[in-house]
Image 1 (cartoon, rainbow, N blue to C red):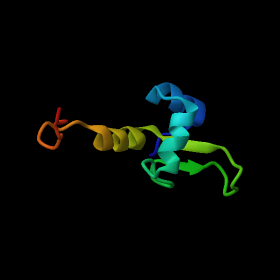
Image 2 (cartoon, rainbow, N blue to C red):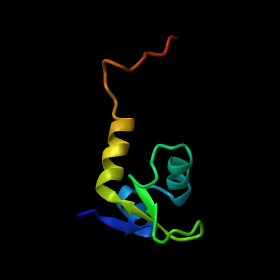
Image 3 (spheres, rainbow, N blue to C red):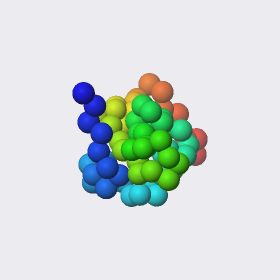
Length: 74
């Protein structure tokens, strides 16, 4: 069973601002119907987030791997 929560609950859990959450959706990092969905099929409907999936997506996207990091040249 999915753990769909409101935007407010997602902001508190993920510790991000509403504008950051918007940018993550807009840039396609958080995917519709995977990480988030509309409560009702209306473009103005409130959004719901799957916290477990959002956390997995963000960890995979922003995880630092020493082997793949590029060192800045001075």
